Length: 311
Ligand SMILES: Cc1cc2nc3c(=O)[nH]c(=O)nc-3n(C[C@H](O)[C@H](O)[C@H](O)COP(=O)(O)OP(=O)(O)OC[C@H]3O[C@@H](n4cnc5c(N)ncnc54)[C@H](O)[C@@H]3O)c2cc1C
Image (cartoon, rainbow, N blue to C red; front, side, top):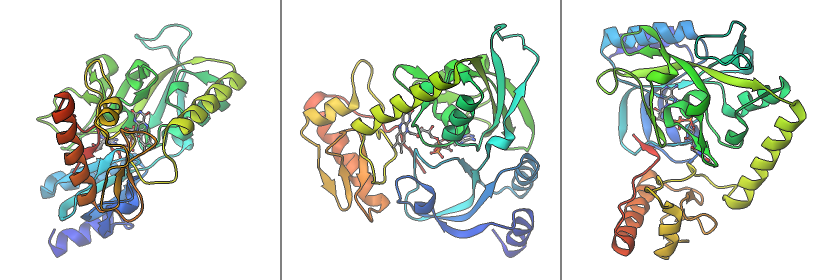
């Protein structure tokens, strides 16, 4: 960006961080530097920013909680947009929509709102449907982009529609049925040719007993704590499960639990977690990722594909 563009961006987003180190915005606690990072919680600023970026031909990336990303070292030009949101932005839409069964409640959430906050809000408001997602970090927009899920369910099952902002700064409402959801991925109409940002998500939920919802969430979170490493940086499961198998099983079979590269390590607790034991740099994580892929390929003939999005 030239100095004129930097001044204009600072006027649009006064809290812009220049040369931000993404380690602070990624649950891996590792990452490279980006030219500019802006945190946005309101739709008007977001629309104005996307319009400006389009007119200036400046590249951008969007992130939510940073719980499934690795930003490599080296400078990343352009703007990283970190979406934020609170439960104050959650609205219940009263009238049943076309796709909606009579007992369903349609709830609209800004994409930057954390999944944990949405699930907490659901329990408080006696709404069920998202309990299986309890304990998954990140934002609701990130969850839709990743089609996040657990225990054989994924968020696609409760997505009614999403509001998207295009790289041209236009806003479009996309019906859930038009989104091509697959295992840990989603494709919006027009992608990949067009670049889309999920600005809001409408969920189909159902009335449920408040205490039961809260109890189920607690049970799921405690189950996750028993199986997953805690207190270390990670992005959750690093690799996608290959069809009919588990990446963790294949990594364990290859004897790779505890394998380390610099400060990155294959978790001794859960083989599909690459953890940052303290001070890992993106190169450590990438080198370990490659070692794991090659060793599993040799052992089992399966080339693992990262679930983590690498920028
Ligand atoms: C400890 C731990 C446990 C985890 N367990 C699970 C699990 O059980 N199941 C599971 O599925 N995942 C799991 N994850 C991975 C991760 O939490 C999910 O994928 C999560 O939904 C990502 O959301 P996010 O907001 O952090 O996305 P980010 O990491 O910020 O971004 C991920 C991708 O989504 C894109 N993106 C983010 N927001 C938007 C948006 N608004 N519009 C368009 N694109 C967007 C980004 O560009 C990036 O490509 C785990 C991660 C950790 C650290």
